[in-house]
Image (cartoon, rainbow, N blue to C red; front, side):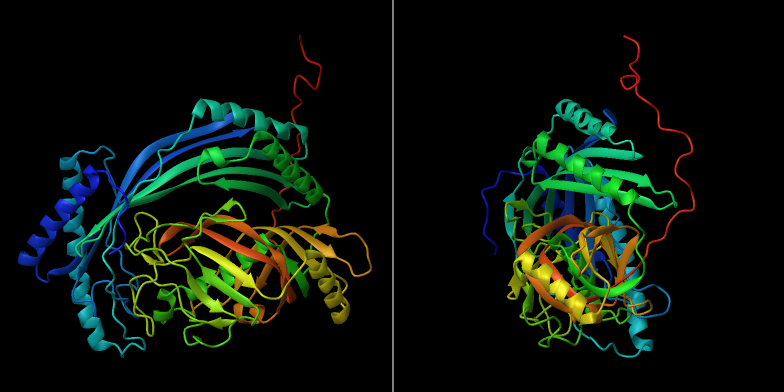
Length: 553
């Protein structure tokens, strides 16, 4: 049993436990087939945000909500209603929870009624699917991975809510007006926004094994964004973010104003930068860019459920204890890490969405694959969860990433890494190399029916010339490639880790994640031209403010 934190009585948890026991007892006695497992999870969000542009507030929102997710399992842990269908009608994945709204008032009668109705609905769907699954197994060839559908895990008892959210909307609105007005100094920027958001995410879980959990986290974020359109129709954008566990940890105004200047200046320079051409050659990814690179091309391919699903590409399914990365690289997923270098990480949590305690996992040790990210859905060779079953409310749990941390034993100072890039450019007789300074995100295809490829979307890209010319900013490039080929091209890393905080969308919805990596040098990467619009920039001139015209006094 997990250690018990100091806890106060919880009306919500008590109502959940009471209704769970009542519904499970009745279903066990009267339902056919009876359930063998039942769990409730309630996600409580207290959220506030303010957004502004050019000295005005254009949006604000806030409120409190609760969402209920019900998991009912009928059959046995060997074969239950969550078993994936291979081909034919019925689809591959299962959806039983409704993600229903629940009152955020602690009214036991209202809470219990919603639990009762959603349990009945989820059970009916589960029972119907189990009948279909039993038929399906009789007419389909045996699965290559015949591991169980559900694992047995230790009972967890833990109760520790995050501190209440403190967000003064009036005060933040004043700050947003002041900060967003800074963009008035940059006429080349078409649209701009400065926004702040903050939330607490508290999760309550009970299940029929005896788990009883209340835990959560806070998260606050500044987002600075700007966009413009080049003369050839290319849409351009730049951004910068700051994250903290609560609004008090966000930076002061002078730091944000300096970031606004960087965002606007970068965008102005991009407007006059030449368009990138398709290119294959050596490159450096900054630490933030490398973090996204690893998240997309590696992290998704070691999520456990993908190893069991034969519609997936299964890049690493049979690669445990074999080399998958250069031997100087290790990759750890650690939801228990809350900070790196003084920066708050977005991918931490105490318990996952199946009530399993979050734990650090070394997925790759010195280049060798050791294990996968696991929920309570076992796969061949890995029978237990390692605390990576996650979901957005309203979705079913699958294995997902947390804090991805890249570690290197071939780390050199950044100046040395740059010289190694130039040496590689000369060795390959290329006209230049590339430096990816920042990146906005990316996506990958893991299903075998599609191309086993990835695309990473850079924002700031430079050509690095071997003859000593200044680096040249270029625009309109996307990074493309295939994972196994890309891994083999990594030569070295810098000695300075950087953090990328964000949200990842996949089968179980959007979940908070972080990627921590040093800069990496690759001997070869491919870029392609980014799609662009055919529309010209605005035909009308920008409005001129009264102050700029020396207006009426």
